[in-house]
Picture 1 (tube, rainbow over the protein chains, first blue to last red):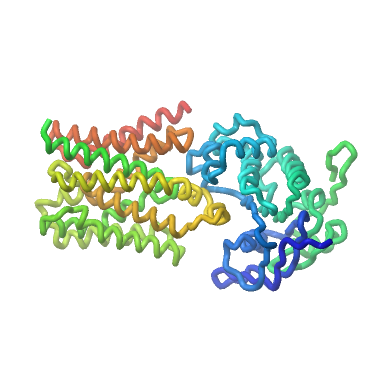
Picture 2 (cartoon, one colour):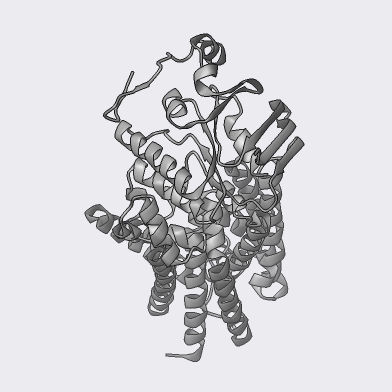
Length: 236
Length: 256
C-alpha cells in the first residue's frame, strides 16, 4: 500500500530575485531513499532547506502529519570558531547523555570521542557526529546534504554502510542531495534529477543513462557505472 | 584600602568579568569588534553625561541601543558587511562627540574613569552585571548553536530572531557599563581580548566560558589596583594587562 510521507506540488523558490527552483512536483513514500542529483548550483541544497521550511517558497509542501525530520547539513564552516567537545555539541541539542551514548553506538563511534574537540575530528568522524546529532530528535525522515563531500574513500564506504544500517534499523525515509553517482547506485531507490527544474525521475538503473547524465551535467562529469563485486568492493 | 577603591574594584571586577563572558559569545559569533563601534557611538552620550553631571552609562545607553538597532536592522535587511557599518559608526560617533566634549574631561570619556564611582552606581552596576550573566548563561547554548549553524538551530525550532535580539540587548548593556571602566574607545577590548586569550587555551566550551570570565575579571582587578599605585588611568592598564594575558596564552597555545 502506498504510504506517502511527503508531497511537493508546484514548488517555486525565488531568492533575491533569482529563480532557484521552478515548478517542482514529486512525492516520497515512507521508507524510501530518494537521491536528488544535479550539478553545482542546481538548487539541491535550497530544495532541502525549503523542505525544512528554512526558506520562503510558493507552492505546496505537505509532510505527513507529525513527522519528525532530521537534517544533516553539508558543512558547518563556523564550528571551529567555538571550542566545543563532542559531548558539548550534543548538549547544545539538549540531548540527554544516555541518549548520546546510544547514538554514538549506533553510528559506530566509541564513548571516548565525547571528550574530543570537534575541531580535532577527522572529516569522516565529524560527518558521523552530524548524522548522530540529526538522529537525536528521533526522526522518521533524514534530509542529508552531500553525504560524501570532503570524506576520503574509506570514510565514504562507512557513510554508505551507516546510512544503509540506519535505514534498516529505524525504517528511515532518506532524502539526500549529491553529485556523486556512486552513492546513488548503492543507496537510492529512486532519483530526482534537478537543475532548477525537474529533468527526470525514476529508478537509478533506468534513469541514469550516459546521455541523460551528460545532459544534466552538460559534460561536467565522467560517467562510470559501478559494479558491486562479490567481495563487497566496488569496481569502476 | 579605602572604601572608594573597594567600590571601584568590585564594580570593575563584575563589569570586566561579565564583559569577558559575553565576549566569548561575541567572538564565536564573529562579532567581537562590534563592541568597538558601539562604544564609539556612545561617546556623544558620554559627553552629554559629563557636561550635565549624570552617570555616563546612562548617557551612553540610548546611543548604544541606537547602534544595536542599526546592527540588527542591517543584519536582517542588507548583506552589507560589518566592516562597512563599523567604519561609518566609529568615525561618526567620535566626530560628533568632539563638538561638545569638555576637553578637561576627555580622558574619562575616551578611556574611562572608574576611580570616582559612586555607591549607587556601583550597586546598580553589580546588579545589572549579575542579571546579564544569568540571562547570558541561559541563552548560551541556543546562541552557540545559532553561531555554529543557523540552519541547524532553525531545524530544531529555535527562534533565531528572538535569541539574537536578547543577545544584542545584553551587548548594549555591557557596552554601556563598560564605558565606565574603559571609556568609549576601548570597549571592544574588554569583550574581545579575554575571549581571544581563552580560546587559545580552552579545550571545550566549559573552559572557554570560565576562562573568558576569569581573564576579564582578573584584568580589571589588576588594572584598577595598578592604577591605585601609580598615577596611570585604570582603563588602559586593564587593557594592557589583558593583552599581556593574551600574549601568555599564545605561548601556551603552541605547546598544546
